Each structure stands twice: as structure tokens, then as C-alpha cells.
Length: 118
Image 1 (tube, rainbow, N blue to C red):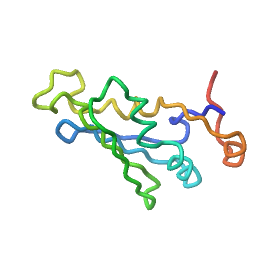
Image 2: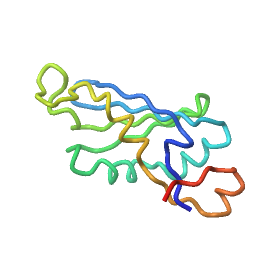
Image 3: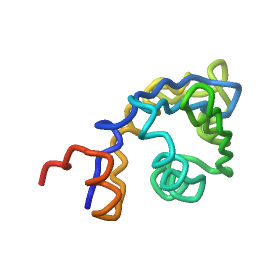
């Protein structure tokens, strides 16, 4: 099943120099293992292909039901150097929540996940 990240998680983002920092927080504790399994650094890198020039790092924060991603090379030098409209990387959280996951039907039904609109 296709599942929208926005239906199962919240996100916040900001800047750390030339790196965008995106925090992804499960809306419910039962969704956190799904995020860990499906929202990998490689998947996020594919999602942001063309928007970032560096690697993607992922850090797990199970006590917060969260994942933290560092998107290196995302801000054209950072807030004080970049001519990008969003030099502080605030929109990366919204862009992250647009990611659609392919979740096995059995997992989606067991967790009671909402269906993604067609």
C-alpha cells in the first residue's frame, strides 16, 4: 500500500551551515518502527535528488519516536551565503512529509494506517 508520510509523522527543519537538518517524529509510538524500516538515508536521498549535493545521514532517537536527517550540501553555503529563497532550510520538513512509502499490506492493516489518496 502507498502511505503518505504526512499521515503518520510530523517534521521540523532548519539549517546548520550548508546542511539542512530535518527531524521526523512519529505521530504514534506504533508508527516509529515503520519509520525506522522505511525512511532510510538512501530513500531520503532519492526523495531530495537534485535538491542536495551531499550525502544524507540518519540518526535514530527512539526515546522521542524520531529520526533526524542531515542533508549535506542542501543550502548553497548556508543562510548568510546562499541566494536560495529558503536559505535556512525551513521548507525541507514540508518536502519530507510529501514522501510516499510502499508499506506491505499486512503491516499497514496491522497498524491501522490511513490510506494515501489516489
